[in-house]
Length: 296
Image (tube, rainbow, N blue to C red):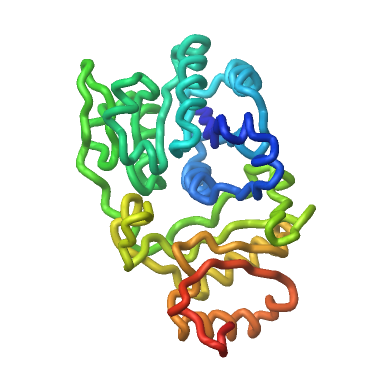
């Protein structure tokens, strides 16, 4: 079964040339995890199109779907991209009516009923998607009923069904490494704010969730409780990605990293033990109460 996952463009990025010129296009690590999980199954041929980073037109996307004939198209749904997702979804339904459209990520998780009632997609994967998407795709492949799949919303006989939520992934170390081999990494070689040009930059996710529950943040919507990867797992991934993809720049996309002053010191010590401090550069956002003069 062929599957195409899309990170769609937004109208702001298309119309705002100055905005686009100043942007750093970050490889979407969430989609890379989804692909890694699906790619472990021999039944699935998974492809990815980052329209947001490439700037490819909707016509290009539709022609690609006509040519490759995927059974499933999945959209990563963030609010700025919603208008374009509506247009692409309609084009897909008009030109390839047999394609199942699956919606995921934050906007779809918050507004599953609205997106389904508008006919934008057939199924919404809510919250963390690795296991939910894989189970859903297997059900579609086998022609099985969807009512038993935790973490999805869908239309059944014209009515919206919200299945119970799925349990969170408890041990993040069990997840496969992001499938960057499916990506055109040339799209992610610039970070103007940091003066990085023509160098591969890969994101690292060392945790999911945040213990602070700030009202302006979406972390608690997607991740109901914080979970943390081991330092060994994070460093092993960085080392693997450095040698596998020649990446020398890594950015943590956690709510904050390190998780404590002690954690930051241990991470740096282990980084030096591996000799990675001489081979890579890493970037993070953190909180003022997670650093001191020693770690800074």
